Image (cartoon, rainbow, N blue to C red; front, side):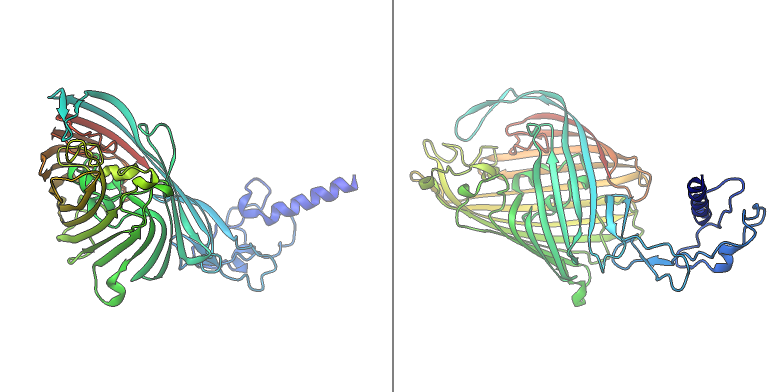
Length: 499
């Protein structure tokens, strides 16, 4: 019995000390925690609030001093705890905290990111899309003389289902990112889409290692979560580079006293090699660089004027890229294996297909030069953006003499939009074209977005709808749901959810 009495006494003492967490008749309750940055005094703890029952014991319990805290300098929302001083009892400072932040996801992170620089954020995004396509032609014939069927489509698709893991490790200046991607037309497979570590020397210089986007083309570098329409333009899909492995240098010139300038450069295995095995790579590297300038102030994420800027903001930019592919037939590797298949003629013919450039001949090697300039403006809910592309494919070699030595293609997209209801509803239009020796490809579209988030600068959670008239498609893109030779009307409706 004495043992049980002692246990009951210990429990009662614990309840008294845990006063702020326990409420009930006959139990002493401490006042609520102080405001951030304010220590609780002994007098405040020892004096019961008005109207509360007196303590169970005739003598006051020992004072409990809560440790003061202030916002940490390394991360928004992180906390560092002040020493407890000479308090007889102290609430210990936790080493890690768990929670959630909008648009960054769930997190577990150190409460002192300078002393213990470890943090993990887990976020995700899903795009559920409906696609309908009504053809106006039944077939098309490519430059190699192959006739292919143009198909009507009526289907649902999970276009992007992504899990993002990001944070800091080892050093407060070392950040990491892992993106895992799945979609309905990807054979139910999950890919390691991107993964890299970035070390920030200062604002002007960051070094990145891993797999990421080759540094060219503005709309391509913009996350698909911020697209004006359901997906990227026809011209961007035709000319764009892709994911690849290598090195990046990037930064802002603000640290050098030049405001509004950002650069990014990459030296990689190629311009679009993420799905290729090492044996399929030659001994050439691809290079790309992009520059952008916001001369009138921060342009902000995305291309629509979600923020409703009361004075104009402008973005100007330019991109350049270079790649070379050598004959790999001696290793039993055909040209165009893997992501090299992104090179197409302006009528949609894949450059690597037999007969694409001349009957009976297959391409073995080439050199690709890419350039683009872009501009955008936002003002009072209105926005407009454009990008102009130029590409030259040179040093063409095949398993026989070719009638041409190079191929030059050009293209553009122009977009305009306006918010009808601030941060809730906008309408948009776009025209995009690719021009080359094999003919022109054109797409013009109109659509709208309904932003259904809670208004905390939520540009991600939205419903989008657009209608696109496609004429003689030069691209083959599962992301845009436009395929080579398409000629007809495309309907897309998409719900995007992200956290």
